[in-house]
Amino acid sequence: MTLAKVKAPKPDVLVVLGHEKGALTAVSQIKALQSLCPDSCPHALRLGAHRRDAGRRGRACVLHQWHRSLGYKGELFGSAEDFAKAFEAEYKYEAPYQAAQSAGAVHVFVDAFRRARSLDPQTVRDAIAATELDTFYGPIKFDETGAKPVVLTQIQGGKYVVVAPARWAAGKPIVPRPHR
Image 1 (cartoon, one colour):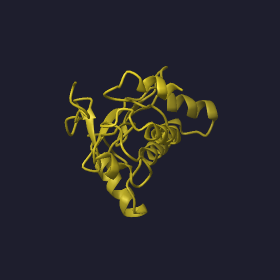
Image 2 (cartoon, one colour; image 1 turned 135 degrees about the horizontal axis):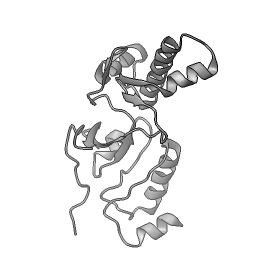
Image 3 (tube, helix red, strand yellow; image 1 turned 30 degrees about the horizontal axis):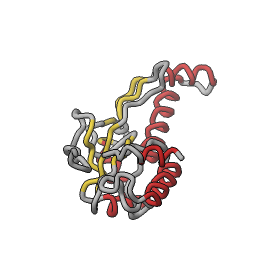
Image 4 (tube, helix red, strand yellow; image 1 turned 180 degrees about the vertical axis):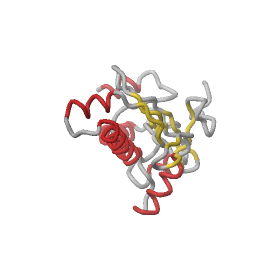
């Protein structure tokens, strides 16, 4: 029902925010509608093929918590690119942001335990709350929002390329359809 309403005004771009399962469901429903932003929607978005297919006629943009091209650095893993290369050497596939996020979380715990010098839950919690750490995953400092900046990537040439914000952009966004 919602996609049928979105189809009526013939959008140039459709943005779907969600986790992988929801996004894959949305893309399969978009494919079923066929005429919903046909020049900008990927023909198929499935694991292992979505980057290749998205680059044929349309473009897909994805929000990322982390990307290997970001200039983040830290003492434990080096740069974001260093972490990505080490992960790929060990596991034989591209490092997803979840792996980087998990490694960053472990780094925070190790740092907090060192500073707390205790296993007392409140002491460790206070140490975590006081964390100010530069890491390959980005600067980590907790506040009341718990928010972390994200980057927008676009699938270009079968690879995720950071296109925004400008500070981290490795490429320019390709507009999926010319303005009518």
